[in-house]
Amino acid sequence: MPRLFVALPVPDEIADSLMALQSGVPDARWQPPENFHVTLCFAGEVQGGAMRDFEEELSDIAGPRFALTLAGVEQFSSGRQPRALVATVEKSERLDWLQQKVTTVARNCGIEIERRKYRPHVTLARFANGAETGHHLAQFMASYATFKAGPWIADHFALYSSRQGRNGSIYTEEAAYGLTF
Image (cartoon, rainbow, N blue to C red; front, side, top):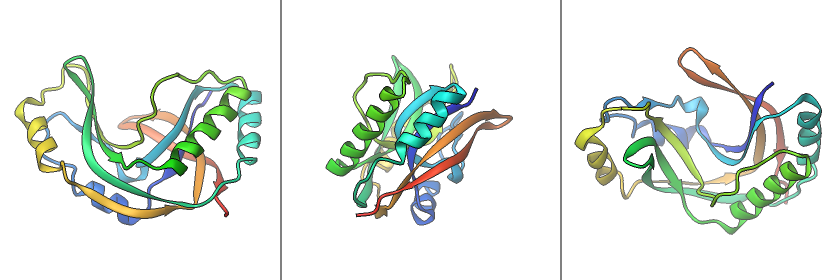
């Protein structure tokens, strides 16, 4: 059963800017550029019938192209344990609109979606339990607090499947949906 998510892909020139940030933090599992994306909705494990419905219903979303900009970095943590380093996405009403549409479609297809505040980002690195980051994490955050990349035009979103590979997750684009007006 595939794990699914819907996301906006990150163009190559933005990925190049993100890759330039990926150093200086011990125990960070840096994400490869082909995994860079802005998640709209994480669906998790989805059965075949629900996956087909979801894939089909996503094609009914019609929306405009819009600009996105990355601005700053942040860490996601559980208590004191860092979980991820991310580049944050600047506030965008059109991004929020698209995220809400995609989430509504998922729920209408019977997919259970977590109810938490949407924090758009691109994951740069992940940390295992007990990762040793020391002062390096604070140094990274301070060094890239004013990081900026973009804007770029989001002209489509995609449904991805995720499977675990030897060196981390492998994402496969299952379907792409154009933003056309």
